[in-house]
Amino acid sequence: MAEILGTAANDLLVGTAENDNVFGLEGNDTLNGSLGDDTLFGNQGIDFFQEAAGNDTIFGGKDGDLIVDTQGNNQIFGNLGDDLIFGGVGNDLIYGGQDNDNLSGDVGDDFLSGDKGDDLLVGVSFASANPGRGELDTLSGGAGIDVFALGDATRTYYLGTGLNDVALLIDFAPAEDLIAVSTTNNLSISAFSLAGIGEGTGIFSSGDLIAFAPGIGADQITIGVNVFPVPIPNT
Picture 1 (spheres, rainbow, N blue to C red):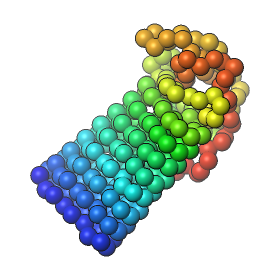
Picture 2: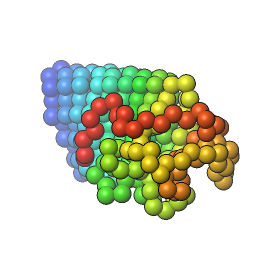
Picture 3: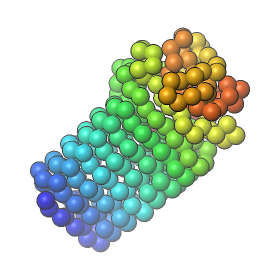
């Protein structure tokens, strides 16, 4: 295991093939743990994190960070600042922290928590031909005006295999949150009971369940078409 420390400058910090601890410290740093199950700390500055393999733990630090972790079952904490986080392939736990964050779980069964701030929650991969197919994602907005994405400009997410691909919207706040879809054509909303969870509202596209909001009435759901607050890149 290696311990890699940055400086007060803008550093490029690259780990080894082992399980590393990488500390950005001050400055706007680039952190790459490389192989292994790494722990990365951004600390101060606007940092860029990139991880290619391993089950990693990443702490974004005090400023708005860009975090891209392409593989593994990762735990990612944006902490302070307006963060942009991509979880990658694997079952990820992603916490935006304070401020206004944009979170993408990518491929896998992911848990996304916006926490405080006005957050965008996307459980799927934008690069996928069928985003969300075969995935069971859990999206939690937390405090603030949050957008739960069930589609983008051209596609509806979580289509294809019924209950095997669903977004669970565990704390949708009717007075402030919004569900984003590509189109309301063939979209329906109705009371639904999901085994193991209970009563709530199901959101369907052409009869296929794409999302479930427990404890929420169908008349409390607000739908918006193409309402993403920022452009979303492919990764």
